[in-house]
Length: 583
Ligand code: FES
View 1 (cartoon, rainbow, N blue to C red):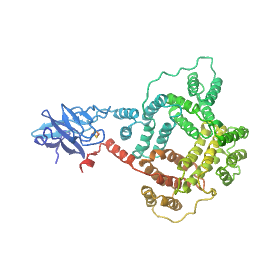
View 2 (cartoon, helix red, strand yellow):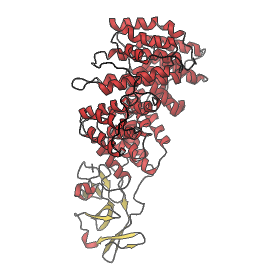
View 3 (cartoon, rainbow, N blue to C red):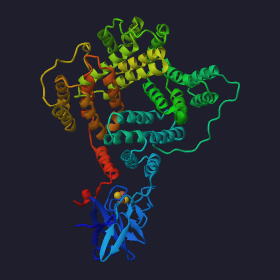
View 4 (tube, rainbow, N blue to C red):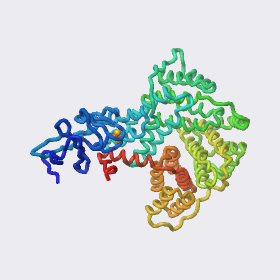
């Protein structure tokens, strides 16, 4: 039994620690490695800072301790790491008294108070998910300000995209970043590790140097700049757009006008079929809203320019005729003034609208949107219908052939993004965005999903399991077991039992995040978190959860993220992973 004196705990007899034979001892549940080297005894954390392998299985030469797994090396005396940038090894004071070895674990093992920042920087440059995961776990455990951490990531991401990403790249990275943050905010501390790791990993990658972009010399006006941005977007010249945006920033006084212009250009008819535009400009708007121009200028200006000035091929005949119809409908849209009445009292035949949208013919598809807008139905109501329609299709798409998940989730995410277009750019641009969503529904016409009315509730309340946790467990268990044929019915049974669905949504989210496919589902998960609240009054809202559960089940493959997060948690809490190897 260990005895304690002045913070030092007896851990062994001196004759038990022999040169060349490291010894593991336990202090306060933690595995400590003892080494005798050049006559002195040294104590270190027994868990290798890299991935937790027992260092007692390593070897010491000239005061350098080398782990036997991946070969990382540490200064045995001071703990400094020679291999990783900042993954220093915790070392502890040792005293030899009267034939016994005493160790003081205390709180003196940690070498750097800013280790999490150094680790995060290292992870951001290397893209190593494990390093990022460790940094995030340590930050959460230490209660480090999330704002400081995210600012570091956004600055790195801006430089990474500006110097390493081509003209048609970068949107997906920002999607992971924004959606990771939003999903993380749905959870408490430990459950936030995976989405925050996705967020940081999204913007990771090499980041080079480049000269700062100089503003255009005077005389330049905002009116000229916005005209030039429109021209460069049509001409696919992203460098010109970036120059104009930077000039607008340096001139000052026009920050509020930039985002609406970006949305307007991204929703131009010639971008019909480019479904990423609406999503990515929406994410950029959220970055700006959260971080402000000072932190996010490089990312916003560079990535927006690349989105608006991207290469695009000539439209085929079908798309060209849809573009023509889109342009013809502009007259209708022009009558739609920003700040129109909310439209909530206008009669809206939702089922006729939905039927037109999925008719499989471009005339009725666009016609449904045009009619609703002309009738004065609010954009918010139209979006809710589109979101629920997409969810209903996810809840019913047959899985015995290609279920079309990619297109279906895009229908939902794009529809949801129209709310951002309206918030940041107004009703006129949001109305235009609706045609882009409608085109996505039209593009998914190959899906064999029969249409049915949305306006009626999906089933009536039925007595189900008396225990909500039990009911949730059975749904989650079907996802784990990949029981695609059971999952829809079980989710519906849970919802028909009268439970709110909030707890199930959080549970579904965790199962999704811990799966190796989690990153692919992240954007949809975030959308469903948003829309679960925004569609609260819709009778078919439950289809959001049924659709999500079915997709998560069908796409489920492995659990690597879960084990990485669990191990990172152990690191952060100072718990040992050694037992996993030793048992
Ligand atoms: S080098 Fe020690 S666990 Fe990788």
